Picture 1 (cartoon, rainbow, N blue to C red):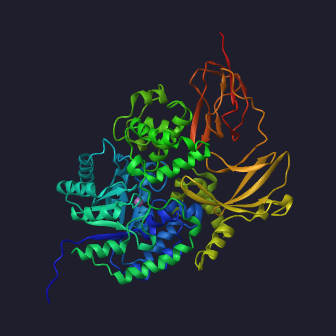
Picture 2: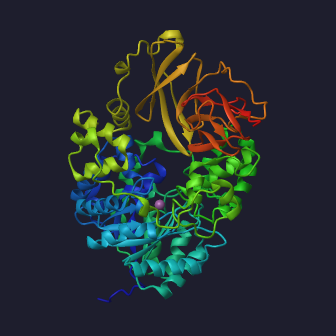
Picture 3: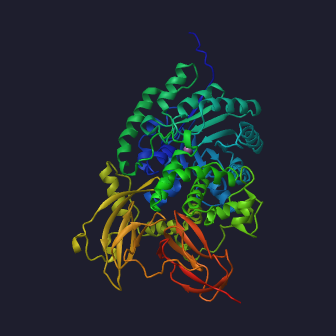
Length: 637
Ligand code: CO
C-alpha cells in the first residue's frame, strides 16, 4: 500500500474547556459539563486540551462555588490520555496583581502536581522579567513551557521586535513559543510574515492563538501554517467564532485537504460539537451581546472588546455622546503610556484614562490610581518610553521604579493569616486564599457549613439556575426581609445589566425594614446576594463603579461648586477614601479624596493652597459633579 506523504504535522489545541467558554459564556461552564464528554474528547488526539487558568480559577470560586483545584484533579482523572494545558498570567498567576515569588513558585508547582502538563505563560506588557519565575519553576517540574508573546499593533511593535522576543523566550528555556493574539488583530499577511521571520531565528515549535474577534483568525491560522507554524488553537464549532476561536472541524478539514498531517477524526469531532451545542443552552443567561465578530478595530484601531467597555463606561457617566472624542483620545493615551498591548489590565487603564481626559475637558486632570501605578512602573516596563511630561504631571516627585515589580514584594505564604487558619486545609487552600482572600474566606466558610452547590446532577438550564440562585446565595429569610413582592406593590423583578461587556443577572430578592430613613434592599447578582442600603428610599441605579448602590434622588444638601476652593468630582462615582481632615493644610494639587468611578480609583486634587474648611461627604457616599465635596479656604498667611 502506498504511503501517503504529508507536508508537515500540525498540532491542534482545543480551547472548548477554557478559552472558548471564557470568551463566550463569561467563564461559567461547570465541571460536570467539562467531564461529560471526556470519553470522546480525550481520545481524538489533540496536541493539548486547554482546561484551566485564565479566568476559570476566579470564576470557579466567585460564581460557580467550585474548588478550582478539585476541578483540575477531576479533569486529570477523566482525561488520562490528553496533555492538559493552562494559561498563566506570569507573576499575576490567575489573579489581577503581582504576587510574591514564593506564591508563584508554589502555585506553579501545585498546578503541575495536580495535573497540568503545559504552561502557557505571558505578561501583558511583554516584560519577560514578569514571567521568568513561573517559567523556571515549570521547567524545574519538568513540564512543557510555552513562553508567550502578546501580539498587538503599534508603531513600536514591529515584527523585528517580536522576533527578538521569541529569541529571548527560547533562551529562557521555552519548549514552544505561543503568539497570543488576544484581540484578534493578527492579519493573514502579517501572520505569514511574522511566523516566517520567527522560524528563521528559533528552532522550537510556534503555537498560534488568535481570536476571531475581528474576523481574521481562520485566514490568519491558515497563513501562519503555510509559513511554518506547528500548533494552532481552535474551538469546537458549537463554541467557536466571534470573541472565541476558529472552528476546529473546518480548520481540520481544510488542512487535511491541503495535505497537512492532522489526524483528528471528524466523526468524533461532530459528537463533541453536538454535546457542547446542547450544553451551551444552559448558559444562555451568561451570553453577552458583545461576543460576535466586530470589525470596528480596522477603522478605529481600538479592539472590539475595549469598544464595548468604553461604551458602557461612557453610558454610566451619561457621556455616550463623547464616544467619538474618546476613540480619538485612546491612541494618544496609549502613546503617552509607551504603547502597551491593549489587553487586561492595560486596556482598562488606557480606556478609562482616555474617557476621563475627555469628560473632564483636560488631559490628566483626574488620574486613576491604576494610571499612577502604571506610570510608576508597578506593572512592569512599558514597550517604549512613556511621555515624560505626562509622567511628571501625574507623579510629581514620586519615585519611579525600574526593578522587576515583584522584587519589592515580601514573601506571602508564611504570613500570619489569623482567624482564617482553621479553614485552610491544604497548601492549595492557602494559595486560593492568598490569591483571592475575600472570596476564598466566604467559600471556605460555606464549604465547612456544607453549603456549596452540588453540580453533579445538572441536566438543564432550569437545574443550573436553581443551583446558582438558591444554593450559592443566602436566602432572603436570612436577611430578615419582611416583604417580598407584597409591600407597596414592589414586585420581585429580574433584569440583565451589561457592565464592561459582561452581563449580570440581577434580581430584586427582597426589601428590609425601614429604619432611620434607611432601608436595606437585597439584590441577587449572578446568584450572589448583595445587600444595598438606600437612604430615603427612591430608586436603584447601578453606580459608576459597576456595582449596585442606592442612589438618593432626593438630592443631598451639598452646595454646588462655585467658590474657588470648592473640590468636586468631574464624574459621578462613590467616595472610596477621604485623605484630609477639617483643619488640615493643603497645597494646590494635593490629593484630598479618592472617588471610585468606572471601576477605577480616581484621585481628586485641591485646586488651591489653603485649609480644609468643610467636608460634605463621608466614605461610601455616592456623589455627582454638581456637588461640592470639600471646601478649601484660601490661606492668606
Ligand atoms: Co485567548
